[in-house]
Image (cartoon, rainbow, N blue to C red; front, side, top):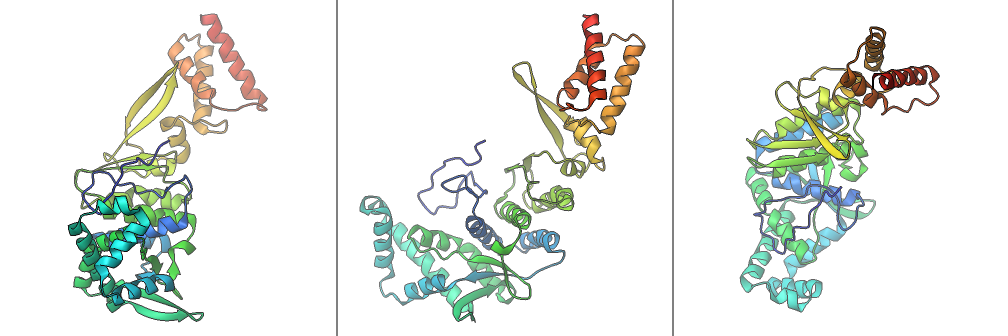
Length: 367
């Protein structure tokens, strides 16, 4: 399945119709570093909006069980890049040289002087803001810096959010100073130290909140991966809250999680199941009226995934046997049962295999 589309972006223009919010880069590898950078960028983008920050706080509450202060972390190398740039006299020429070295002279020459001047200005404004607000400390004799959101003035938060374009411009010139996202603990807890499930939740929450706009379409593939049952049950609720500022939006979720389906409030969703009939893919649409259903009910009646020990399969099997006992001739009813039972590997379950064989024999007699 393709989940990343190659819409090329050769500028730092923020006006795009498509955002890829996953973690794939040049390969199909999922790397913690790329996710950390993307989540940090998403939080920076929402800094100017207290409503969005509050919505992200709900995801943090679910992951940690309570609220946590968040901060941005900059390692020694990134601190050196910031300070080096600010000391350079001719910053315009420095960025120009970096671009030529990174992109080649031909491509670098395609960047207008006006755009280059704007890039240099954004980077300088960003690095100055960071230098004025970073708190440096020594960790095992290595200098690191943190930028605590709790200590930032509202105007500085707004400026930092606006200057995400400065981070993008710096990266384009080969100066990567994207921070890591940190969470309050005995010491600051880095995003890369979290479990895969915690990273999954915070990544989706931050990105949807940061990028969703009115009328947008959000597509999420199998979000239940690495999530425990409680997180799966609360996922849709938090997603709905995260889109409060993006009216008229729609979300498509590809999932096999009965817990997620049973947590959807009445009237908020439709469930589309795909099946194969002959050589065609058949879609069936059902209203989302499964709130509070048990997992077995959702698996059997909604996702049509039976198991030999499923209560609903046992009940339907009893109905089929009663139908045969009464001499029934409803082929559609019998075919429906045989379709479901064909999805089960019942080898080694001799009683069930014998019953299925008897049903097949009865259907052959009807034909």
